[in-house]
Image 1 (spheres, each protein chain N blue to C red):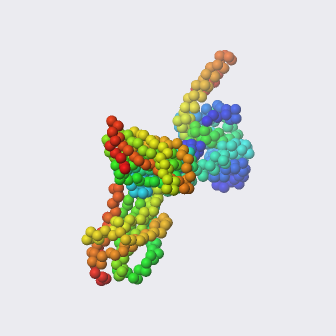
Image 2 (image 1 turned 45 degrees about the vertical axis):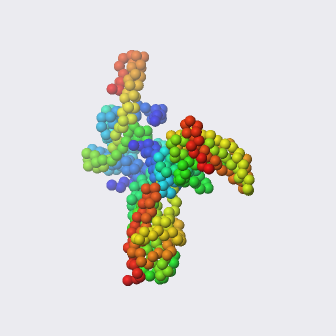
Image 3 (image 1 turned 90 degrees about the vertical axis):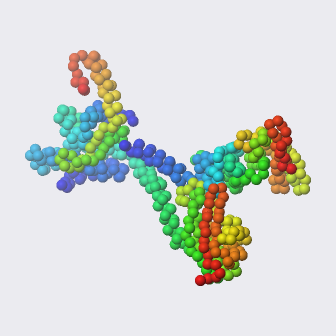
Length: 239
Length: 187
Length: 114
């Protein structure tokens, strides 16, 4: 039932209400009131034309109504409320999805590649791994072990922080003293490096790693934090 | 619920979640102690059993925590909104208790502090030495009691020295039992 | 939140609170109810009911929600809040005291709001 007189009236009322966000609600409430009035008139046998005229008249002065409504629908409060509400919603969502974030980060880390530290074509063989260990708020993921003809053993791994972790985010590199072989030899001649970023990619090259060793063992054990990984190697050359 | 109240509630939510969830991620924390614990987590040691000392100089607070095998020393600094973060210039971090007792001097905080692993040592005595090129001079001495955690400390005055070419150290640590007998000497 | 009685007539708010204390109403129903009780405060100015209701909602005395009315159509209902109930009982007391005083002065019966 679209009556131009009613629309006229509503438009005039709303023209005084500066906070547009509430226009829909106000319009709906007043429209429904006028509809109910109109229906009442009709059910009392009043003709359409009169009903329409009375409906608008009985509502009162649209300017007065509009101005008084405007006093109740402050733009300042209204906009602050909307902004703060949106921000609160965002905060709540962001706070709930750390778990989502962690897996997202894990997926991302699979796809981003390493920049070459050493020409990998020189490697006799390489072993791909995906062992993941968490110490405090840091994730450590072993990615690959490569063995070179000059008896260098390269360990490649990634580290990243649990999103929203509260600890101070220092970079973590595996100390070379943690590298052993299955015969108990501890290796200390090494070089290493890492890239910075949300996910750090690290490499550690241990020199003079025995070609007869059947396993390389990563054994980090400090103050209750442990990383222990055994990687079986292909002793005696490539397959 | 009307909008005024809702607005207040939303603001509370934003602040609480902001500080709780994201404050840590931005490396700011609600107190110097929280900075200490966050550092320990970041460096993969600890956490401290308790805070032994907090000393404030200006906007910085030095926090010393007790570890099972040493001390945890972190410099913190006041940041925005009354929150705290790591102090500039790096931190000491974990001091492993390798010797039976040891003493350290912080010029920034005008503080000497140390530990004793030997519960018989009830008091200690040590000196501050100024090293200038080849010459060494004792410029101050201290006597402290050791508390039940094996920790001791003292405030120091401002010492005159040229930080470019001269150095100050805490040296000559002696430990005494409750009768005053010398039972430990680092020499 | 204090309602400035001078501006909208404190008794209007009181009457609306009285209605809503019994049950929830939507705007047009309120007009009809008041008309039935011969209270024509909104006569020829039915639209001015809404600024009053909105003001009461801003003040936390009532809250609104949408619901299907008896006719089946959806309407915006108002219900009284705890704060509104408190305001109602406080104002009722004040009103009684006021009318008792007036009665004493002018003598005879007066239509005290009960």
